[in-house]
Length: 454
Image 1 (spheres, helix red, strand yellow):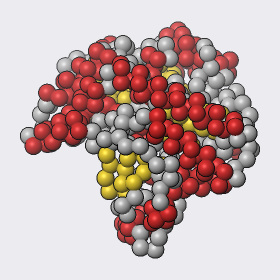
Image 2 (cartoon, rainbow, N blue to C red; image 1 turned 60 degrees about the vertical axis):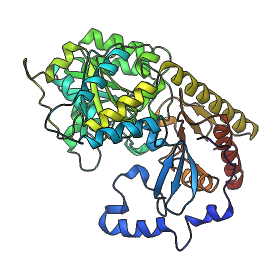
Image 3 (cartoon, rainbow, N blue to C red; image 1 turned 135 degrees about the vertical axis):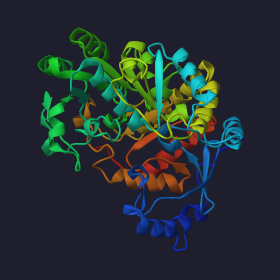
Image 4 (tube, rainbow, N blue to C red; image 1 turned 120 degrees about the vertical axis):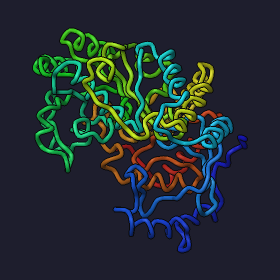
């Protein structure tokens, strides 16, 4: 049930998380003994320690100290229906009572595959896995097997999961960048340096440079991996013509165009690639298609997906104990059934509303800020200058401590956002009062910290 949000929490709530007897503090102390850094995914890291969740309902989360906040992260976009949706919960309970995993397929994976193939114009066949990272890895493997080539291209700063090849130049430091029109391939610690030789790094929104790099490596490129609105690049949208150019160039050179829809599939009923007017050869999916449970998928044309077909000329072996787990399939199926076009329209209109309110608030404060995003997602960049590519994102998430401070101010005002930037997403239980409360809390937090344009 939605109830009117309060613009701030009580002073008791504001301080309980940081109190000496905080349960979150104690849990983190225990976690630090048995987990490196006290966590098992870096995306939830928060100094001096994270807030531990106890329960969630709708668009609100209650922590282990009893404080309730409005959730504008939704497990990093995966909960489009919010927490504990009654219909998803009931469907999962029915499924679990019948068994949670088998060494046989279950009807639900057929039904979810049929739903997605019917909804996404360029997907004829689909294959499930357990995470977005796995989905991207499978797409890359499929592209290499299909084309017989070994190199891939991706954009500097774009995040596509933790597969060695797609991690290249995900967050390079300025002294590693190389030339603007020919970025260096920078590997992550733990990745063999030789991986860099098989990854061509493209500069976002620099069409001529992209054309030169693609032409130079065309005979070796199996795939170009692209997210039309990459969070790692601050959700700076592709300039007009860039995506169309990529589609034309890949088709001309026999390269597969692979869309990363893991995060951005929530942009529209038929996904981000369709919303931006392109039809890729393959795409990776995750997050909302699992309804809050672990999931990933790769989909595309029957011709390309044939590399996984064990009844034909199998080229890519793909096992996995929990692939198409019936609980995940059930939750995803119920979620996607609820997300009809009208549900996307209402949620995306709320996204327009909060982005407009953020823009006006930041303008009224005299901040040279930029609000990016589309559909039900938004990012507010609290710095001036034209935003073009990864290199123009001075201060976004990785390099400016103010975002961590801002996150704590927002937590005190009853809002959950990331410490890596003013990034948020909406869920269907939200309405304008929640959006207003968020903008008001951000306004107060910016004032409290005395943030000025950089």
